[in-house]
Image (tube, helix red, strand yellow):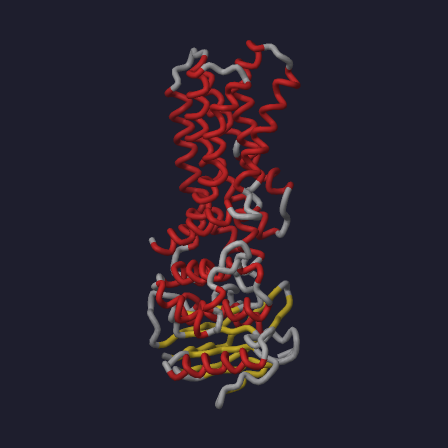
Length: 202
Length: 222
């Protein structure tokens, strides 16, 4: 499986965010997208998830399911966590598990245990802290298997222990032949990650 | 189907839990209809004559109340991004959301209508006719409202703009809903004629609504 972006360009609000962007990512590889604020890191991830249309260039997943778009084979973890405060932790995860991929209930339990939220299953998500909300969003990635992970500043709001946990989850995903693209300012905690540096005025 | 069922159940749960909007519509409906006899005065004949129109107007305005939450809530908290990355077509997901919205806000209006009919001096036959037309007509209000909800989310203007966009589109539903009710009560047109047109309007809006809303949302991706 290989994710290839060629000559990608993105225009938002009349402003050229980036252009002539090329990258390729194979199975088991991670790509850290870095750059100053406003360089287009989030835009690139949203573009890959199918939430923005590229103004130029093309994007292809070689060896993926042909009838699905790249976004439909990817998990997008954005700044917003898509959690409903009035639903419990378990209900939130159960919904996304069923909606995104028909995941079995057993997968939820395992995913919650992996992010350390298994004791809070019945707590309404509105009572979670920012870091716990982030963990619950991560549990979604584990409950529904998808090959590509698009992570927008995944370490934000996570404490040191949780950052270690995240690094472990990413390593396991890469070992399974997954692909990770992460926009980040800090280290991801991965042994080897290629870097895609975006800059202003490219 | 699992995905759509999950979305339906989630939206209904959200509507009935704390902060959901399921009851506001019915309460508004109740208040509007209760105020009419005070404003018009205790003229029983007049009340019975304008009763169906009052019930329909009340239901129309009440159905607008919760409409701005239909898509905006998911748009604001990032759920909508994930709905787009799901393998379920956006049109079907929107139809499931609209159905959940109707079940939690439209259906209670239909159930409340016979009770409020008493306040407006409607006889059982007239009450039955109004309730039946509301049952058939309110889905049209929700699915037309879905288009307005999608457009206002894309334009990032909530509230009043939604009402201004949606209300003109619901005029045909109002006309045929009220005329079917009146046909059942006083005639002279047979009940079936306006009622069939009302059914057609609902079916049309159920087909067009999700596609138009999905088109608006896709155009507004940014």
